[in-house]
Length: 310
Image 1 (tube, one colour):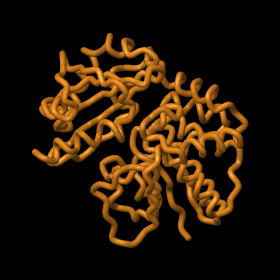
Image 2 (cartoon, helix red, strand yellow):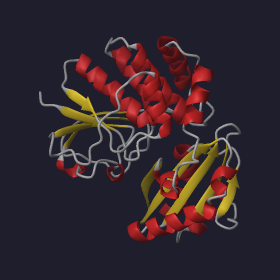
Image 3 (cartoon, one colour):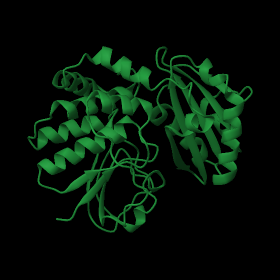
């Protein structure tokens, strides 16, 4: 069997990197030849987790077809979030926890999607189903993914399965769930050395909504004022990227990991659709979103509903 590349979405987060590493390990244990790679440099939070559990950083690729004919996708399925030449390779399998959108293949494939808070939770189930023991370092990176995607189990996307998985993985990894989790989140919350472009794009995804393309970034902080003081620079970068890519709306969700609230910075032709989706007026391109911490569950669905009705 030929080698496959395993990777997550562009602007990789901890779930994307962690799930790719874990699935690569599982596939090799099951006698498949695979390699975990990334579509970008890991962010500070992910780098902290990889270093803590002494795991190698996956190499970054820009294209896949020049190396392999088949790939495995984790933590995404939408083509615009994937490798640039995704149409030139065969998608052999997908393991994901997001909506299914704009996805089609010419051949049958293995597709595992569950409405859970994190792809890593599904990966733990796959290890058990195949009766493969989870080593401590793999448990650690899977735990890190769950902590990241659920904001230490506080996000509305978090399910009882995610909680049980996190507790089990923390025990295997030999760490305190709360202590390790908070330290990891804080490691990714320091934006003092980041440019406006990095703040916008370190964790950003592009979505097709109706006839528009919507860009939604998210940055986790311990004090939202750290970002708001740089709002004008961020808006200038937003407008430049919107002109370049013709975005119908650009949103940056600034999430306070301690208070579990967010502030949204919004720009683009579809700003009125944002106001309709959240029943709140924007004031100088910003709005407080109390209790909103999840892009997937609390931001994408209401925006998609509004744009799909245009």
